[in-house]
Length: 367
Image (tube, helix red, strand yellow):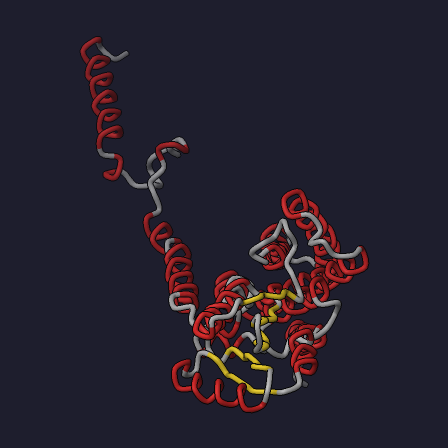
């Protein structure tokens, strides 16, 4: 039986060991030491540092894409028709051309009716009809910035000739959406619905079959679009458009949301864990600046303006704007863009699906 002195010595040893554990736990092996409570676990700094790549990627890409696209919103080759007597219009266009440079593409015509048809068909940004008063025909649904630029061109001319400038709007915006960005925000939100649906499924059900993924995506495309549309309607109404126009617009946005999800499925197959950064690059950092919603395409630098001709968000914004504000005029371009993205994505999904099945098939034994 141990003596009292030996018991005290053992207690002091245990106390010292406990103090050592509290002050310097790194002196002990993970195998020797008992499991530490969750709150006292060592911070995995390597994992933490590696995970900081994502917020840094977000910061760099957001600044790179949005600032490069929006830092200098200047009109570039905005088309304006000057209508009136042949001699007067030709002289005015010749006199203005050197001063406006590549900001405006001016064209003279004697056929005012044909020029107005081009405006209503979304082919030109404005028609300046010479006379007293001087009439400026615009379509504000094409973007407030474009209208301001055309008015800025016309006002000094009217003042120089001592006549009043009368502005006629052939496609006015809804009273509750005076900036015309309501449709753009709807497309933006539904973009996030499309790719987040697939991103979440990749995390919570990574082995879900493609057929089930498509079913969930289709459901979320309809539900997400309707929820976004109804919530936004609290503030901006229904764009002062007919029921059929709103229905057509919703059909386009649902299709767009579904295609965004298809692209996300493809990106997840091809890039695995890096898919979130790739899909955000495609659908946020490249998609939104080139969409023509915040700034018209002809106010963007060359790279971004060129993207607006075929990128998916631009196609969606152009199509819904055509349906809501122009009675469907010019909707074909946007629908063709969406159809192209759908066809290419489905084809690539089919190819990757075949390759995946080939990789998973059992190898034949060598005789």
